[in-house]
Amino acid sequence: MRDLSPYGRQYLIDQDRKPVDKAAAQFAASLGNAAFIAEYRAVLTAFIAQHQNDADPALIANYRAQLDALPRAD
Image (cartoon, rainbow, N blue to C red):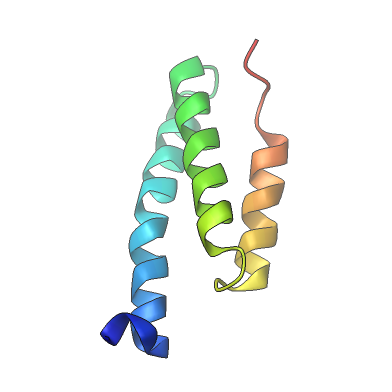
């Protein structure tokens, strides 16, 4: 029930941002690491898919820009 309140929804979004923040830190520490790039891409994609309709639109736009800026895994 609390997950339906504005506070509860924001709490869930904040919890779901933690893997994104972790992956961003790993990527920043080693920009060429293919595993970190793949993980970062995966968590960004998952977050955007899950929260594109309930998260701050500026956050979603920022995450999309970060996703687009990631090096391609070849």
